[in-house]
Length: 130
Image (cartoon, rainbow, N blue to C red; front, side):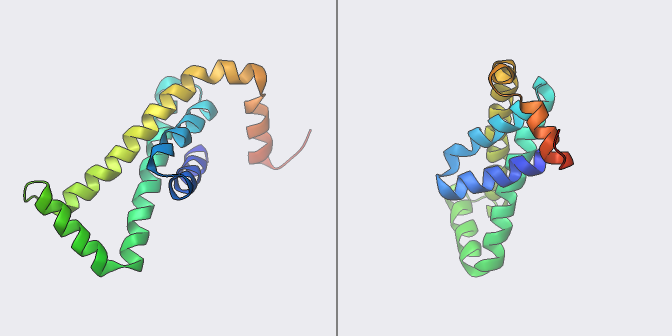
């Protein structure tokens, strides 16, 4: 569930503000999963899944334009397969999300003092109120 929320946040921030904001999506994934490894996995997987969904959306909406882009990027990157360049881009998004996840997991105790994140998150997931 946390990875799915991170994915939605990653896509939303990417489309609204730009690719740089993927770190913030991973950050919230790390805050929601306050262990370092889990925070980096949630942030990285959520961001990589979000970027992969954007590539799939582009392939569904404009397949010929995507093919031209992939071939051009492959030629610019040293005549390698363009799919490798796209896969590397998705991995870059996952790396940015993982970086944000580690930062979020590191700063999670600070946020828990100000905002009771675990109780808010559990209320959201369970759909009940106390």
